[in-house]
Image (tube, rainbow, N blue to C red; front, side):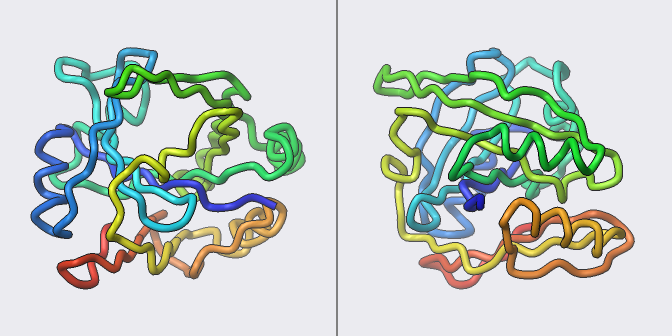
Amino acid sequence: MNLLDHIVLAAGDLECACKDFERTTGITPVYGGKHANQLSHNALVSIGQDLYLEIFAPLPGISDGHHWIRACHTFRAPRVLSFCLRALTTLEDAVNVCKKAGISGMGPAEWSRKTTSGDELTWRLFYPEDTKYEIALPFFIDWLDSTHPSKTSPGGIKLMSIDIKTPHKNAVVNLYNEFGFQPSSVTDGDDTKLCMTLKTPNGIITYS
């Protein structure tokens, strides 16, 4: 069983994305910090119990180093780029499910970032990659002994749904069943697309 941990809303510029998010939702994201790889940084908003939204962007001057970075620079507006499941057992269970499905990936490996208060968050991450599933394929996290970011991020927003469109609906549903994860919906589509709907002080907002 894996629980939805966070959703990644990606943009080319973090400051602009946060201003846009505040204007749209009425909630100001809190700056999270720089990732240890010195390629990216983020801002965070709680969107439910033990659940948060990560606004992700490359650091200024960074244009390559990971396909997320390259994708961010193609976005004219913030887009839902990925989502993460929190392992209730071990990350190795997710690795084994992926191996059985013929999916490879990076990790599990340890990652970290420093918060604005100087604390260091450390976690283990498994990032599967497959050209068939594309962004319908989640990545997986184990927060180890770190405080979950939802507990230190501003609230006032609630996730209402996360919906997936994919050309491979049956395969995606079967894979989610193996992961023990049930999104709000999985529907047929010509392209793979993630969509989240939020209840905010400014009303119901949808990002895709």
